[in-house]
Length: 327
Image (cartoon, rainbow, N blue to C red; front, side, top):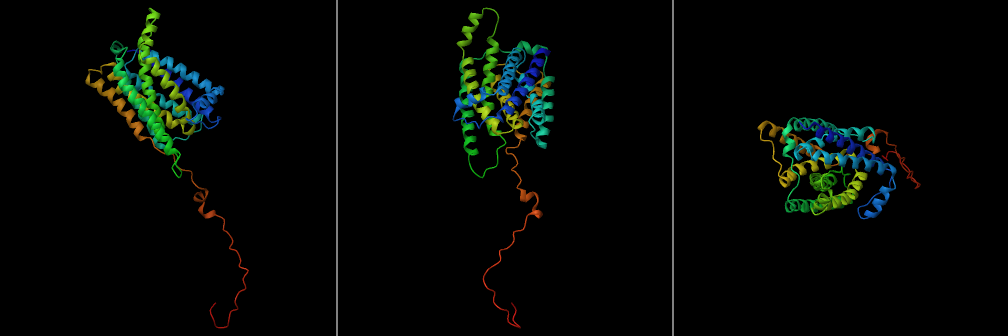
């Protein structure tokens, strides 16, 4: 069994979770970010040492992810990546002080179940079934509509968020939109990992830059940076990151298996375990709440302690009360 691939995936989880939490903490000290001013967003981010530390952790997680994709099939790798949500929820609670709901705590258990199912489906021969590249036409047919859908969904979420008298969003639409972008990025990372080699480096570099992978990475990296950081500043990391990770996982498993042509396990039991892990990941996404609870007014917290307002006394002369007449 490719244990070192599993170890690389778990290391990537630690690096990604740490990076997101550091970035979220840095964003709390920055001015309000807006996707309408991307250059200003990047300027604010680069001015924060704490945010730069988080981005370095994410870059190290990216390097570990390259090693994972050279060893594990897409479906297995994504199932392990989802387990990083457990650490993310714990860190967001301890470091950021974000309160998790009962439903979100139940999702931690479901994620652990998904991890166990996917790891149980792995065998040593899986490394030999790992595909290296995908046909460019197939990849672009999948990537371009997905990127367009992600951008449109994010724009729609922005419009709804500007409406008055609306419940504060928990960040699920933002997470789905960014997850689609990162899903395409994950396919590009998979393609880059398949072309990296230490033999004949100039030829490998030429083949890499003739492929769509580096250009998809460039676009998703730039767009994902602005969109994800803006959403992360507005919403809880314990919602944004799990939704984004789950969408990325499901997208990569479904579309990546088609694009790269990696076979699923032939053994019925292993197939059921791997598909079951993916199904649990989808369940986690559907179980997360769409809105945060609105703040409770003080009057509602203590209705019986509401101060009484004295009635103003009238300055008009009162009419005399005649004997025997009810006032």
